[in-house]
Length: 290
Image (cartoon, rainbow, N blue to C red; front, side):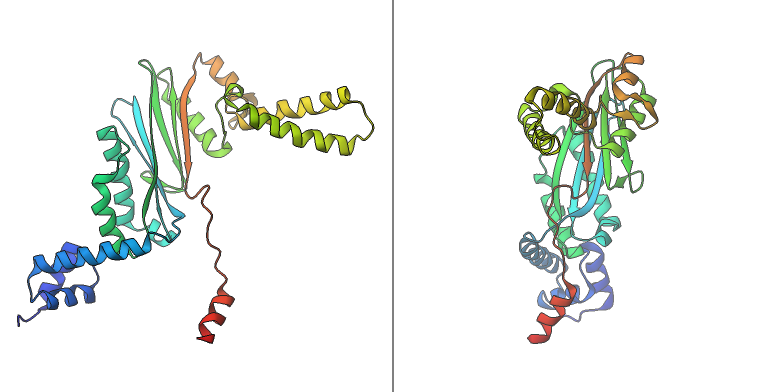
């Protein structure tokens, strides 16, 4: 049997990213053949990744990639299970590469990155998923600008892309920061679905009827009319007060600059994912009963 040296284990660890003991076991099983050991580790990692695939991954990062001419960009959310792994360099580098590849290939297909994802799952021991990717592009005379918040210049918890129809990067950056802070759900009132407005009106009408019992229907309509208008301003980008100047709406700001937002997207890590809440006491008691 081939003697397994420390140098062989170190070499395999550097090439595979697997743990020291896993590398040693793989080399012993492969009788020192490093290529066979790598294949065995990859198979074991893939099997482990399948098992981890059902675990909730609600942490992670948002990354962006912007074309050199600032005419198009990609935003991506990559998830893992813990904040610790979200800060890990290998995870961050993988996430950055996903956005860059999507931009370079003008595609949201991550099939080519699957092997790298499975390898990273094996190395880091957590479920990792590419949750969502979106492209946006500017018009011929426009610009796309990105903004990341809650991290660094490469990866963060919140990411925003904004496309303007004029080449004013400072204006676009300010609006991107506004979107990060204020979370507008829609660009304008025209984009708000009729059923969303109807549902809000139903809720407001019920509240008005309780607070203004006995008042005629036309009075109640006037009462909730103002509240509906306020609601629409709060959930639309153009209706919101600009964060840098509360006396001016974003719509008025754009009008003054003779500009329009043609597209925007905001990603926040884990939004919409139901996170598992750990009950430490119950967990300990369950283990004690075994």
